[in-house]
Length: 167
Image (cartoon, rainbow, N blue to C red; front, side, top):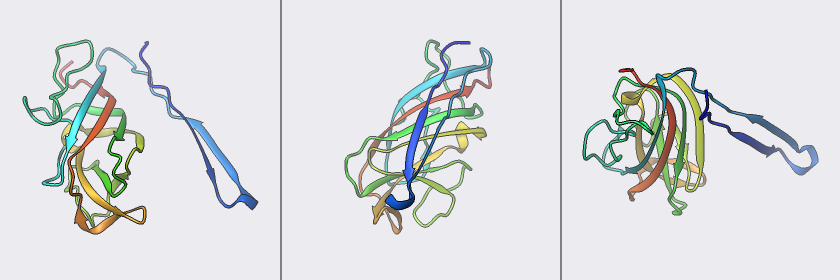
């Protein structure tokens, strides 16, 4: 099946004296017609932890539909592969992402932090759209604050391959 997600990453780690490189692919190819692409430009704020991909018409996440169809993303659709980019250029504003439907808030241990201009790519096939939450947080010294939510609304770009639960 065409329309696969192809990702290649490379990082350099450690001090110059013992430098090492890690690289690898993080690809995903939809297995059948029930797995569909979605793309949304999402407004994420500091007011409350909320679904990153909205299933409510008129909501801030652009009420995404599956690309090439009129099918709307539903709360029970599962996430096979997802890329989330924090587009803000404000270094002190990060995006917290929760995969378990819990509160996405500062001081919560089970969040993923995506800094300004950063991209996060994950495979989480047991996570539903309803369990994928986002919220802004203040970043200090490269870490999420343990005492302050973010002060800005940021735009996150979200692209993913979801299993269409209604297909």
